[in-house]
Image (cartoon, rainbow, N blue to C red):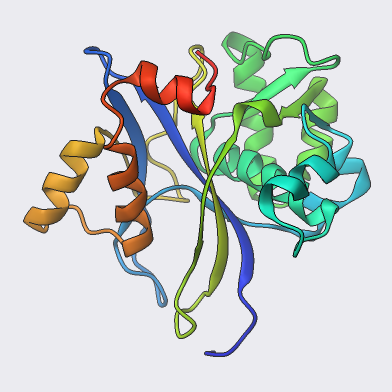
Length: 238
């Protein structure tokens, strides 16, 4: 499989403040498979064709395709660039049940709780099973992808001999205060909230295996001494 063109993908690092004003990040561990190892990582989603279509891009708020390309680089089309934001938001919802959304007009992010959240979680199952696409889910709930929640973080290419081989853009986002991540599902076997410092310690001890790109991202986040400093740097939603 070596030599195939890398797959465009988005990786989202979901963050929240801890009780001491520090940083916690959400890591997941996928079940072992034919091509996977049991590394801890962040939610990753390949960019699908439907993520880049006009109707889907029209369900985005806060960023135009041209603005997205200016952030990611001119080697991508505007539609593919904004499609990376869509893939990140869609993948986070599919894998962790967290939806970064807003209502029409860009009003404050929609409250995803109570019966409204229950209905979305039911639709999430249809999304995962392929019975509903992401655009239809958003339209049925009157929601838009809130691209303002995601801040571009870094860019990694997996080794050419890796399979799958990803050309991945990484984003950071804060967990909305009224939402909770699903810590166990068929998409991943384990979810874990952990501080960057603790993550590096466990990696060094051999009990938290990570790919190099994941470790490098955790190491970069450990440079921030508080949640406030990180939120200020990336203008994350409180």
